[in-house]
Length: 211
Picture 1 (cartoon, one colour):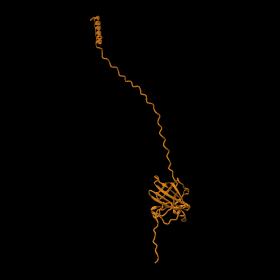
Picture 2: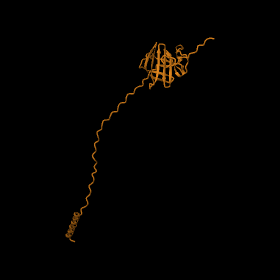
Picture 3: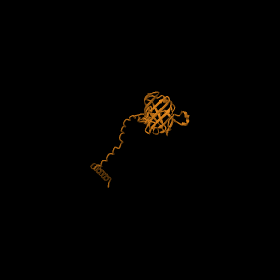
């Protein structure tokens, strides 16, 4: 075949390819998806922290100095012991503080009961004056449901304490006193009154005439 024929055949083939591309174009390639990261969302403004309220300062427990403290009977001379007509089981000897002679209405005081191992918070609410003596009445304990009577004179000291564990009596002189459980004492005496009056009148004995 001559060179002219080869060229003619080549042009004819090229024309066929161009015609096929024009009649049957290749399928369109889909565009790649946009995978760019979204723009960051702005964070909301940060509010300043709310300060926590400062804790209330702890209130220190007030320790009341007891009006009396337990001492050993052998630590003082027998002549200084307070006189009492009976030796009550379980009694303890106490010594009074100087505050006992300077009490007034509204005072908070400590009333110790060594038998219970406790010092009660007492408050004087009333005072009464008698011949040569002063009587103080008030409440004691956290619930203020118990009471006390305290009678002070120049030579004698008496007290009646009512507690949930029972009542106690104090019988003493100006410096020392016996603290005793009421249940162990003379039941014919009402120790809850300031002047220690008998709870009931003594029986009247019939007069016997001599024969």
